Image (cartoon, rainbow, N blue to C red; front, top):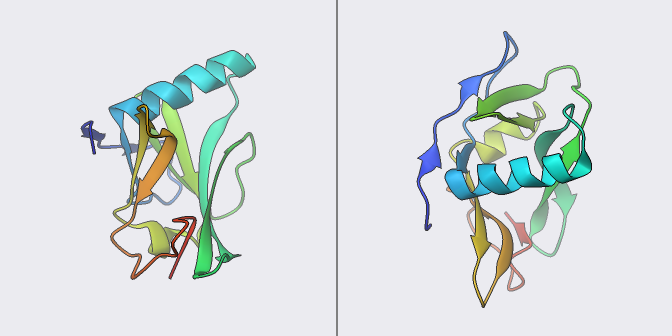
Length: 123
């Protein structure tokens, strides 16, 4: 990882999660939300069945808060994780890389026991 991870703070009395967001990822999320011209968007991180290793990450903007969602704020960026995904993502760090070789969000998850060759799924 090329950047320090931000320690988040719960944004309400809702459950919290153990996902961390780096400075670079928070800056990129903030920039993308600003481009959308909306202030009601949050970054949602979820784990769903699928992929060649059994589970895949979903990372997208969402204006909804669902029952049981865990929400943590990182320097003005809210990260939301649904209650079923929280155990799979505890301690995971979301980063943003912008290099010649790669541009995009990455997820470093200590709970992943293995991943596929494409890096898009884990178990």
